[in-house]
Image 1 (cartoon, rainbow, N blue to C red):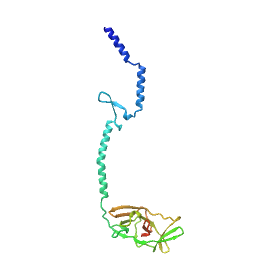
Image 2: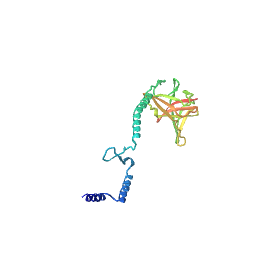
Image 3: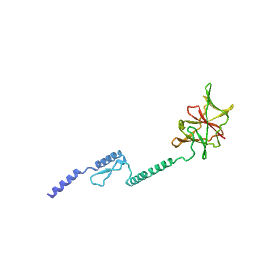
Image 4: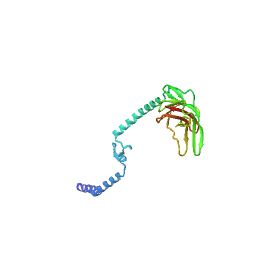
Length: 228
């Protein structure tokens, strides 16, 4: 009986054992299938009996994931502090001189203001050219600053619509001409809000000595000044 049982056991073991070549091919097929799976989703050994679990979708190892979580926590604390500091800086009130009249640009000289010369430019058209002129060769508003700063209290005029132009002095008047061959380019202005309705306008470029004007877009109104 013992011999029969041993023979049966060997036969059963032989049936359950696959040839080496077949086992090798199955292992290679499994590797090929795993090569098509993204690395971060490949199964890894589970600490629990019965199977495998997927790695973190982030693909980070446990230690790096911990550092990443700490960095996120630090950002959540730092960002509100930076925003609060930015808002506090922007909320600081302007304590400099204020214009006594609205819609009139003032040149800022330290703690004092010099009003620009308001006027209406005369419009003349010759062929395809349009010339705007103001009587007089020099403005009564003068500044030694090559990059003047203007303080402006807005009521009806929007500060962003101002254009800064240089005049040409000709035949006893200050003039500027626009046309196909004489297209005057405005000088870039930087506009900054100081308070409700109060703005600062600053010439970004350095101005040469001469006659200039601030003019709202679509208007013949000009605010003249001189850089000496």
